[in-house]
Image (cartoon, rainbow over all chains, first blue to last red; front, top):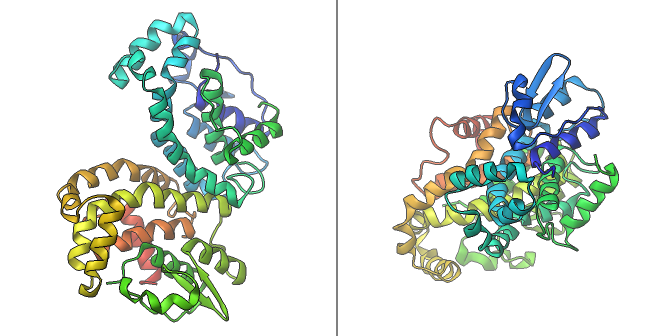
Length: 205
Length: 205
């Protein structure tokens, strides 16, 4: 199951720039495979002899090194704002909401690692979060509302065509779609229409 | 005391576009003075025979009708995202944190109206919120963090020069500066430096 929201950001950013990259999925328990990069989390990108880690740094690298439409039509500041906001305000809540789903779907080889690391980080058992799934999903609604109003204005957060702020949020929904049965974005919502438009455009990056 | 964060957005937007407008402060208890506009909240803008209410609609109007640098360098979607996010995620928390301060500073003529309307809306006495001031201010820190990281990238949220997303957040801090003794943005922080740069640029819009 390939579900890292951060890897999805990178996949969309590569597709945006029209850069072909060989993809190598890495399990939690396969981290030794990226040891040469000097990073211990995905995504990492190798460009020639250079390794770049962290999805934001990868986006900046792609923007600086590759021609084509900018990833940051509103400047790097606004894109970074959305990036950090989604990471800090949305992901903790979504992770709690879908933790039980992820655990059911995760590669069996990763299961022990996932339980140990997540329960330590979140301070509770997977089952205790799974029991509060609906509560977390309800809290998420108001946090997505600003994105709904933004999409009143323009077809994509990036304007007439998608850009990095779109890929940030799309990465989150790609993660949820793979890791969970949660109906996110809510069917029929403006966000659901936007997500459909984005996927249609890339036919899966 | 002129403290509406939404009026400050409009003042900055007018200054950005270089549009001179006559300002008429309106107290809560003076609302009859804007009755002709068809709106019952400030800001309202009169442009010729047209009244425009709501700070976002005013920004769009200024962008559409006046030449000069765009208010929305990243498109209207991203600006609206920041606008709604600040309204919904920051303002409720800030209002609770500084409610007691506002009540002390408000024009005496507005005091009864303010207490009645705010206590009803927020579901508690002004004093009960004032007692929890520090708690609310602490919760605010993480919500401002994405703005701090954004300002790692560019001098202003709008890039090399300020734009509407900057004015949205600046309006919030102008409100706090007038209505409260709270040290917001935190002195020495990147946000404090940014706010200083913005105010320096406009020398008070």
